[in-house]
Length: 65
Image (cartoon, rainbow, N blue to C red; front, side, top):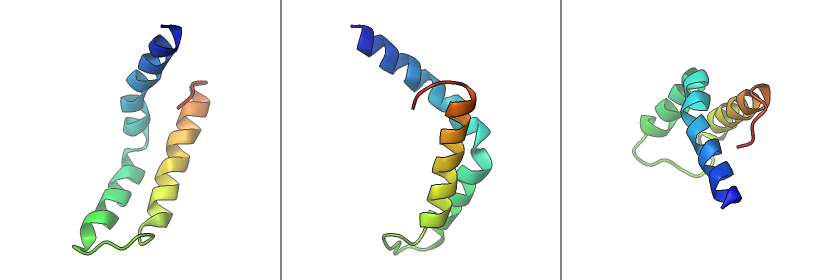
């Protein structure tokens, strides 16, 4: 049950990650919603920036994703 507790703790941190990366998340969301026919890879740049921000935030907080 220790692994479940650790997973729950990690999940509780996600709102903090998202709040610290809200600008990157908004840019990614805008890219995805810009076109009705989103093609695979069309928003890769925005997604990678968003993901890197979340990873950086997790590293700064010394937590895992």
